[in-house]
Length: 182
Ligand SMILES: [Zn+2]
Image: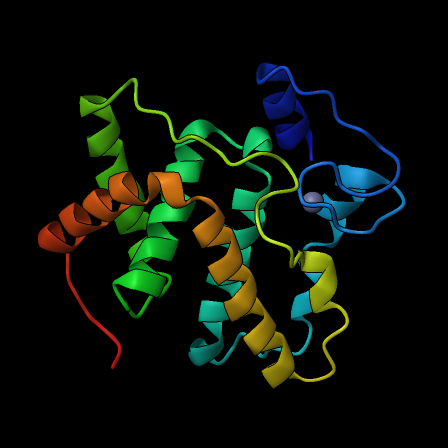
């Protein structure tokens, strides 16, 4: 928890602890604090022992992070937006082995581009669906469809950065393996 509070302070952001989440607009009583505590609660239907469900965790982590970029390190936005580019646009099959490879690739990339920033869309303008909505899903299938839509909305709200992350994704695929879905 301390991490996101420190990161917000570093970015000069005052965190509000009542009402809706100031970043994603999710309907809570205690703002971002409740949003951070509950963002995993919508994933209860999935059996994560089954690797075919892992994609829903990756997409929801990315969507949530990109709806709250002010409380993450700036390179973590590169990571999450690039991963969504790989999954959504490049149709990559993602798994737990590839995330550290993408981190390694980004570490090398950022040493060549120390001053590159992604431009975050305005708060509350990063997709209408939020993690809070997942808790209204009645089945795993409904939740899965909602996560796909959520990730897609958030990804598109960051469209002014798609050129940058698409190039990073291409560099990653050229250096690591490329495994597309149908
Ligand atoms: Zn939020």
